[in-house]
Length: 71
Image (cartoon, rainbow, N blue to C red; front, top):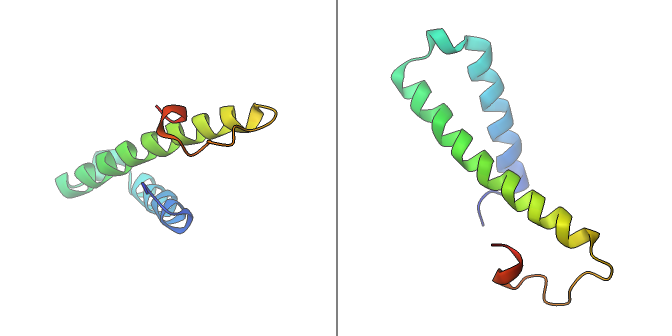
């Protein structure tokens, strides 16, 4: 699992905290943290796009969990 729902909410909250600080004021550690959060979030978005596509199929494939649907 890439990220649970509660972890996604925490990532959103942390990104908001960082943005309120302002990118120009970030420490290197905060820049690194932001980059890590961005990379995770890109993966989450990709999974959501695949999920939306599967949900649009009528009927949803019985083998929807098969990896071939998620690549």
